[in-house]
Amino acid sequence: MSSQLSTPAASPHDHPPGGLRGLVADWSSDQRAFKVSWGKAMMWIFLLSDTFVFSCFLTGYMTVRIATTVPWPNVAELFGMNIGGRQVPMLLIAIMTFTLITSSGTMAMAVNCAYRRDRMNCAKLMFVTAWLGEVFVCMQAFEWTKLIVLEGVRPWGNPHGAAQFGSVFFMITGFHGFHVTCGVIYLLVIASKVLRGHYDVSGNYQPVEIAGLYWHFVDLVWVFIFALFYLW
Image (cartoon, rainbow, N blue to C red):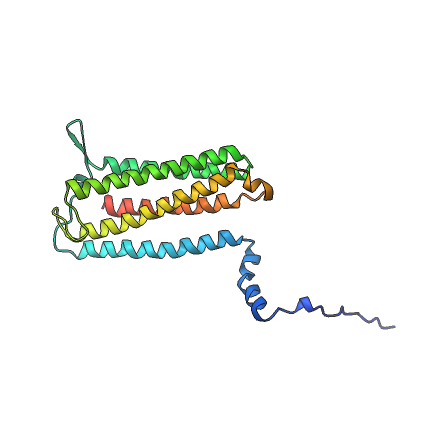
């Protein structure tokens, strides 16, 4: 006696959709496979593209600095501050770096509070992070004012050495400062939503983590700028 195996009827859902629905299904296949939300995936793509931009800027800066025949300015003296009659080299830059690294720590604690559904502490830590970012931008504005007004540095010239110094300095630090400013606004928006309980309804605090990804990226870029521009 032979037994026959019955095969289930083919369902229309077993076949991949065509047209626009098929395009959307193909585009989102990696998102479904790796269980990554659209927001986080798009943020990673944006950060990857921004990495290329900053890499091009820093590579161009290093190329210009190596190729120039005019001596490069002494950054330790140029970015020094006079405190009590003594010239302290790189003091403002050290404070700026400490402020931004500290903000990365507060942002990490905010993400931890978000996943513990600690709404109030999460919002407070995000506001602190945004405040530290704003302090960084204000110190950078002070640094620019000092270089332009007191030191005479311009994007098209520099009385302390190589003329290219002004252009690469204002371009790289200005582009990074723009990212920090956008990050401060971004954090304030997300923190306001957290404070109002916007994410308690859905129970999804992932926007806080996504904002943290952006902020950590901004901090990491500054580490490279600090090492290559101020310490080299």
